[in-house]
Structures are given as structure tokens and as C-alpha cells.
Length: 143
Image (tube, rainbow, N blue to C red; front, side, top):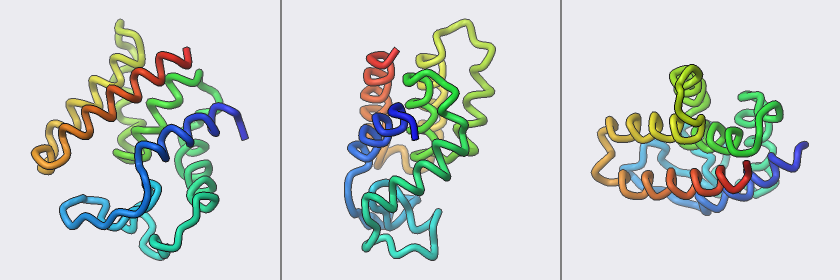
């Protein structure tokens, strides 16, 4: 397991926080960012940090091939995978792959546009934008 994974995991878990069950959140019941919607057979309330780490490593970090990327890009892709889905992380990566803009800026801008189009924007938009800015700052520190 790479030190980049540990660093990114610590950052993302800090963004996600502990147990939440918000009825208007599309993820529904979540803990450490792991949602009941994505893992319907998992006892979310009883999820441990170690179990969340294992899920993040296998289903997000490894699924996106992030050991092959520098920390800043890996963090952006990882955070996107966790918050917007691994499929969306791949779509947005492909959308900016040929951009003349620096990857982190181009990728985070695409994420912002994706968030802005969601029906839950009014409830969660400000928090998502703050998160994107914090991720961008952290990603740029890592490069």
C-alpha cells in the first residue's frame, strides 16, 4: 500500500467524517463516506475505520489505478471517486485528458460543473464547493 494512499485516505476520511443519515443525501446512510446505497449489505453504523480503509483501497484507489499517478492527481481522482463515483471519476478524467489547463484545475472545474447540475445543489452545493477548494489546495501541496 502506497504512502500516497494513506495520505489521501486520511484527507478524504477527514472530509467525509463519521456516521450520517441525512434523508435528502442521495447516499443515504453513510459512515466515513461509505454509503448504504453503494454497499446495501453492509452494516454502515457498525463500520470500522479499518474496514472503510480496506473498501477505499480496493474499490476506489486500486480501481482507479492511483498508485501510478502523482499525489495531487491521485487525490483529485480518489476524492471524486468517493464522492461522485468511480465511473464519474473516469468520465471526468477522460474529459480533461487533452486539456491545455493544468490537470488539477481542469479536473476540479469539471467536478464543479457536474455538482452544479444536480438536483441537490441547493442543499449541498456550498459544501461541495468548499470541499473542491480544500482538495485543490491539498493536491497542489502534494505536487
